[in-house]
Image (cartoon, rainbow, N blue to C red; front, top):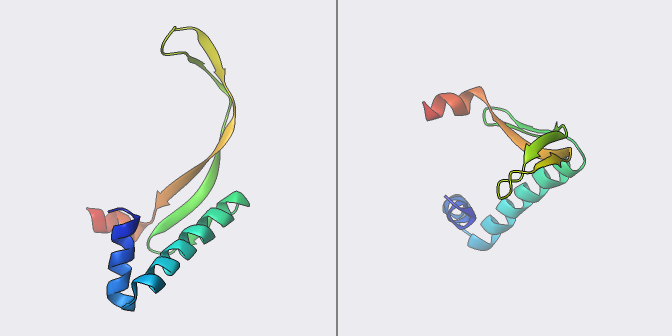
Length: 89
């Protein structure tokens, strides 16, 4: 399912594709904004979106095999909730 499919699914409930697209985009923007501010977003029964820090580490250039240093960085992470895990089982 992609964003367009999600908008179509929401429009079945809202009966308006325009409002559905605004709703879906608003949710995505809210999650993105919270993660930019290093806050987590917890949706009970669904899961938690959060930012995790990866430490700097050593790696290898796959083309040359030369050792390189991979910089520390922040990455988004999603941890599914119990209800979502059970629904997928």
